[in-house]
Image (cartoon, rainbow, N blue to C red; front, side, top):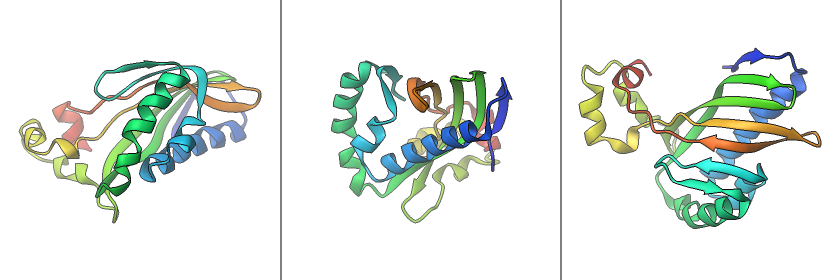
Length: 165
């Protein structure tokens, strides 16, 4: 499914580049490749983790990533990423809303247990590993290359959003 596009008009190659960046982030996360993940950040980037930790600058983001990402290589679950909305604020600035879904290595989406459930909030207490994420990436295009300038990762806990899928 293609993302919804809004804002100023940009060439299709910019849309494709932003979608490819999200796919590269997914690949790096799923394969526990810190350097592949980190190449998508500006040197002055800021990142807020899903647990609310603020990381400022590529050095701090890199130290965190090199610590937490490699141990996930053997995890039975990972995450799938899909850009669902891209707002081109300017031709060189984009805000990207990403749907992040917990997935098993064989492709089963764990968050599907919430879809249509009568009490997804109660289920979330028992199944925290099945909660999806909803990151927002703020990208800047520098010298023709899109990079993450800022990002906020948030775990979805809203019962209505969980039930709707």
